[in-house]
Amino acid sequence: MKDILILGAGTAGTMMANKLSKAPKSDEFRLTIVDKDETHYYQPGFLFIPFGIYSKEDVIKPKKNFFPKDTNVIVSEIDLIKPEENKVHLSNGDVLSYDYLIIATGTEIRPDEIEGMTDELWKKSIFDFYTIEGALALAEFLDDWEGGKLVLNIAEMPIKCPVAPLEFLFLADDYFKKKEMRDKVEIIFVTPLDAAFTKPIAARELGNFLEEKNINLVTEFNIGRVDNEEKKIISWDEREVEFDLLVTIPTNMGIEAIEKSEMGDELNFIPTDNHTLQSENWENIFVIGDATNLPSSKAGSVAHFESDVLFENLLSHINGEPLTASFDGHANCFIESGDGKGLLIDFNYDTEPLPGKFPIPGIGPFSLLKETKMNHIGKMGFKWLYWNMLIKGRDLPLESQMSMAGKIVPEKDEQETKTLQL
Amino acid sequence: MTSETKQEKTVLLDQDGHLANREDWSEELAQELANMEDVGELTDRHWLVIKYIQKEFDENGDAPSIRKLTKESGVSTKELYQLFPKGPAKKAAKIAGLPKPKGCI
Image 1: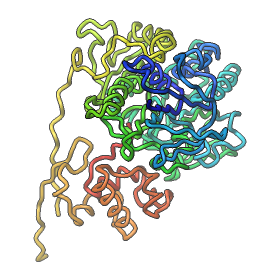
Image 2: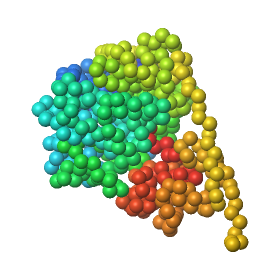
Image 3: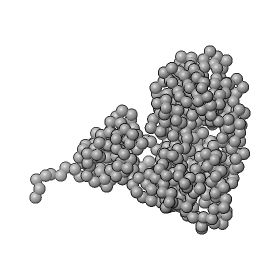
């Protein structure tokens, strides 16, 4: 009998519990899952709360609805992992032993990492929308806001769901237009990146949207501090942007127990093999979702595609076989663009988001990197799919490996040569 | 008239404008790249950072993030931005002859 312990019952951990409970020979292992929270949040829905499109009820359900029957569920914070001893200490005093450990503890926002962010303006003129509390407080603020400078700032990369900030901007533009007050709001996107998005072809496309929607872009801005008195954010190289409303995407970090256990990098993300999803340091530890240090997006779709690979490799390891399943960095994200339309991007480690049709080449129904009503319908329909299929570990009609079928590859620019006088 | 002969060298850059081949890198070229990036004369403090990220790249296959730089090189975030204005991680990597850090997704 093998003990499999899953830390974290968010999207990734819950999916893994469900997959493992349905595995062949699942009676040969005992499954335990630990999480600090009894509520499951549909995190892609947080984006819609500030604009009154979703309410709290749309995005929460009890976690217990989604656990398989035979799973031992423990509600507690995680205190310390001792990988050399195969033990996990919980804050409630329990000490759990494991044969295999799956770490799915995700990422948290850390506004406290930025000087002045959590001072007197926090939750008064400064909000986040990556927590339920932040999203609800922002909804209340926007409800009777009379306008001014709306600054959306990404503190540093990587962040969970790198398209969410753009979606927020597009939805904000739409929201203020519908309230007939767009002329009273100046929208400014302040990012540490050198363009609207991380990947060049998508960045160009999304950058055009910003321009069309009259959203100003400030690039290569690395926030150093918030001046609460003068209401401005100041970069490390002393550039300033004033705000009336600051929507922040704070630093994202893995949970503190990872730091305390000395298992993470400088952001508490766990060094993980990019393809097998095995921990780089311990062969009986696998890592999934936002908790990894993988150079892929931190997103539910990524966790979903990873879950197939992790499942196969974990069973292979238990059976003493080589780990043959390989994760390719596949991500698939709908991007709300406002006014009942949306885009879809599909990419992996090696291939950036490209135009085309998805999932059926030439037909769709979804269009890649193009604004359509159908993509918006896909995005809104995803909530049902998430609650009823995805986290229950049911198979979706999507391959975990990215496919090039249906994608249009633009011609690559020639490498440029430069002559330097020495 | 100067007795120095200016030597011309062609180096290949990748799509991000970083050196395509690490072998092309030299300390003289680093200064040229620093001039192109408006970093100016490279000081001992610049070199501390450049040597650190080269070592980091050799060990881990990627240039370090700013957080890792400040944590391990002993140079504060504030100073890093003074040394390499705008994007220290990216600029220092470029001058060190390394590809753009993968860090940002």
